[in-house]
Image 1 (cartoon, rainbow, N blue to C red):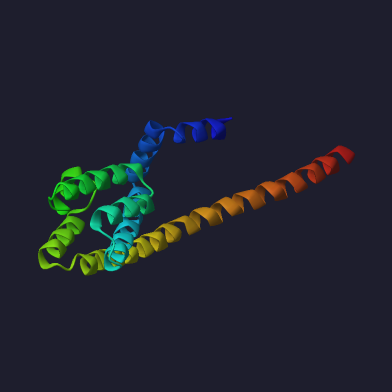
Image 2: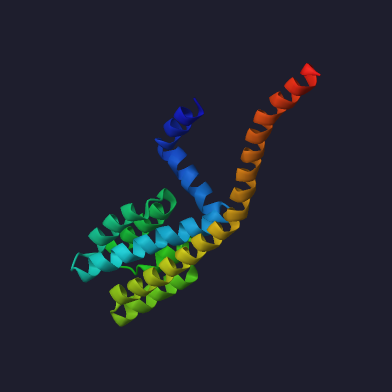
Length: 172
């Protein structure tokens, strides 16, 4: 019942936005989720721009790859800004959802005419950070999993041995 309720809430626009906002604000995992979404976005945008797609269409497509409604709203604002003839970096900065280094690299890429290569560098850097972050999280979870498995094994052993011990004391 809870799973059906969660699924129904996530199908609404407000529910999905709240869930995505929560994912980005989680203490340990939130940073990794943000890095992953931004690396996907920048990698896709870089590839599309290098392939000759106009920036407005590339932003529209790359927004869906980020798979986050909160970041998608910031990307929509950036697309609207670019459509009006303004820079891409300003609305990204104004949203507060993109780290300063991403905004700075986009700004430098726009000024130098090398936006694709700058986005590629951001994507590579963030992919490396995601890999490091996932490795750290895995290293933190290993001891917890070992303790949990030990607890399960102990419960199984007790479930088998306690009836035998009780039977032994009952027979005496």
